[in-house]
Length: 282
Image (cartoon, rainbow, N blue to C red; front, side):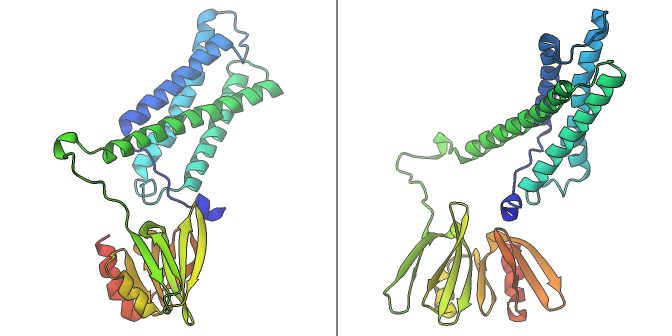
């Protein structure tokens, strides 16, 4: 579960899209409160009621701007695509929901003179959750649209005979050629030596799986030498550098922390230079 929460999650840093979605959500809250009146503002003056309801929208506007625009612009590295994760996205959304709900409750009670009954509190929380959800969905829709546009090949740059590159498969075979195992390069996380076998650790359908093949690390390294993504880091281990999350230095030397794999991977001194050169070309 924790590994799933630590997966990379794209953060939308597009100012124009964020500004539009924040403004739309804030306006939507004002219109919802105006037409459906879930808070039942008891102010006899219509203009005052409008100001009170508009302030609820303004509160959301300010808080969303702080969490989605101001804080990311200050802590740029923390909100970068390489470091942003599902867990961080959940935490910042939860923090917004809490702050927005508390701000709504204080304003409703002490300015709007709205009695804080249980249904009112539930409405406040639901409105806050909905506001956060709409922003998240809007951002994800924008990022998905952006990915699709990147995948589209301009027609003027292609011809009818051009073929689409299919991801290459890696075929492992045992020493006695009695067993074969195939998977795509992007599925492979790492390979470890296990006595007279190699242990292939890979990802399939969001699950981490293992496969034992009777083979040696030397023959496996020869098989994979054409793949720049696979790098030897230890006499008993080689990793897919696309899964490297962090390189740490400890008393025993360098270690690797991988995405979707909980154990630290040691780096032998003889492979440190090779690893560094490989990561420079990532």
